[in-house]
Length: 75
Image 1 (cartoon, one colour):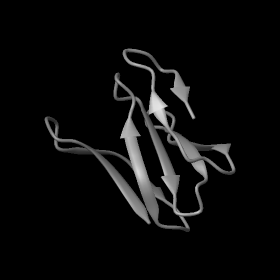
Image 2 (cartoon, rainbow, N blue to C red):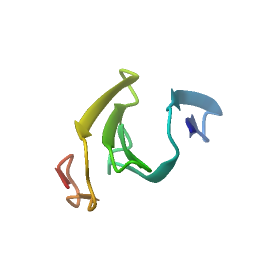
Image 3 (tube, one colour):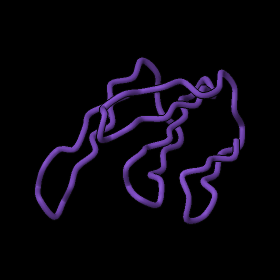
Image 4 (cartoon, rainbow, N blue to C red):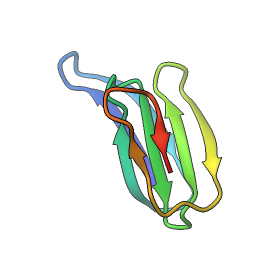
């Protein structure tokens, strides 16, 4: 229910996300600046690591995939 994003080369915490439900999917975008995650209720969220903001994208989602080499999501 908590995600910690860490920069291992600099040994710094880039962000911490607290969520009220278990997370069953998560993936970084190709640039490593955004984190896409889905909880067990199938709700899809986008977290901006730089701005440290969480945004709800979909209330129900079965399929998620980043378009290769872009910041575009198909869900």
